Image (cartoon, rainbow over all chains, first blue to last red; front, top):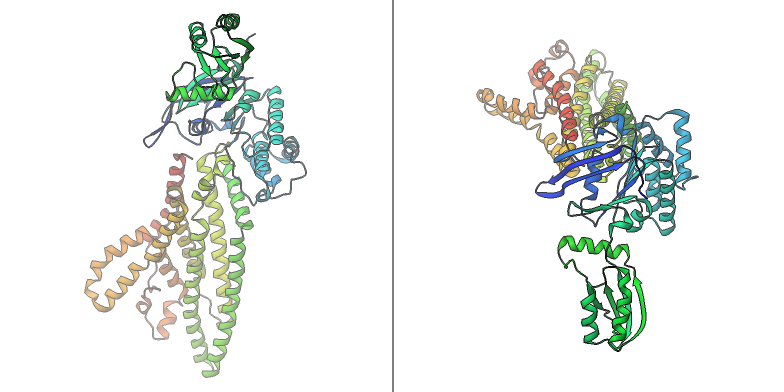
Length: 320
Length: 291
């Protein structure tokens, strides 16, 4: 089933950013639509933060065009309709939580009772109710992240840009933040997420772009992004050369486990070939103790994609 | 609207920072100590002199000298405060990362820079005025001396502070805080060079004065704070007619720290433009800066 989305809310075309001689972002193009959540996934230094800084006007692009909600980044009216939480945000530590939200609310053009009410609401939403009069300087890293998210959603934005959402949060905090963002997404808020945590993008994003060394490597739904040939775990004994040779003739690749000499990983073209594996094991005089599909984690697949982009390993079956 | 919000935020920040409180308390202590010392000196002075018209003249003469010295201290204190307080105006926020939340909001970068500049300009000007008037009040109480053109002197002093603020504003949009502070301090301390050189030349080789003049002018154009102080010192002295009755001519006051002539209109216009142009350049630079 394909999901249909609204008009584009982020349009990036041929984006390039060069710092002195360092190319941070190289010819990046993508579109994010209203109603979807989009994530950038990549290791540290991949260029994710530079892209989000260009989207928020903190950094000027060397080349390319960027439009948010149909407007250029410099458009002030458009900026009233977006929210942003930077990576590891730092705040004016002398402010109390409520003063901090009031200040940012006023920058958004909010005033009076409506602002006061919204401040209370967002503090409640991020789990900081009762901390209104606490100084930000006394906040923990997790609380900083929460109050940062509170200011990002203060103006009920149509689009919120988040750079590394859960850094500094404990597992409970991470779950709470993901649940809150899922709720906001269901209410129609567009979410653009930068992360190097697969769990974040898997939980929140409809589409993900994998980025490394300033270039987009793949774009797609998290589940389909790492669509690779099935791998089966084969436990048999004895494992001898003939068995390995015959399996190799039908499989894409065969790998013996480092620690368990009776365990093989066999990459095949389609699941139906599993029966052929069983037949070959029997035909070679070995006993088959187990034959089960092996699910590679997203993390392993992500690392394979990044490694392949570095050309450190061949694209064929590698150590699992 | 963004400009007003940033100005208010800057004022609030200044009030909350302990530095401001420390400076305020120390300034009150300095004025109090000055009042006590002046009281002691004046009592001793009165004990040694006679009475009548001569005593009054002596008091006024001492008052004028004390006024120049005291306001020179105000100039030094306010200038130091301006450099220390504002060297991190923009660079500090960039280095701390706090601008990452403010810049993407619906306000222009020009509003951010000028809002911060306006906030600090108000603080520096109010502080200078309070300190200036406090010292003058103490001197008036003890000696009866009050410069006839006190407000002109204050105006030039304020212009000097705004020139210094312009330097730190531009500097903080270009270089890190420490570098900016060091540059501002070096310029401020280097500014009296022109006055000292001119003074030495006048004493030892008066014929070379016209040769030295262009160098003095260039230094005053680069950093007009010292020229503005000299302009202010002129207005702190008694009127020329009163000085003549005491047998003193105005050129007597042409020293590295005081001036017997008012500031030239050209230099005054330059200083005013300087105070406007430097923050404007800072806003322009910040507008194009990657954060």
